Length: 68
Image 1 (cartoon, one colour):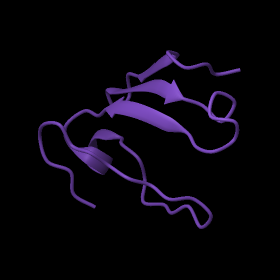
Image 2 (image 1 turned 90 degrees about the vertical axis):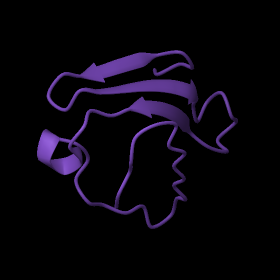
Image 3 (image 1 turned 180 degrees about the horizontal axis):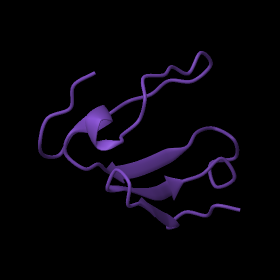
């Protein structure tokens, strides 16, 4: 089970995900992660275009540029 504070790193796209709140820790209300993503987006092996029909997704960029 993933717990708050768990960290996963994907060397393929240089993406690090830290779980801040999980489904269990928020009583099913939400999932919150902090992601540090390598430069280049999809070309660097980042997330493929996708959508979540039953979920809301928000992004806050602390440095750099995010385009969708």
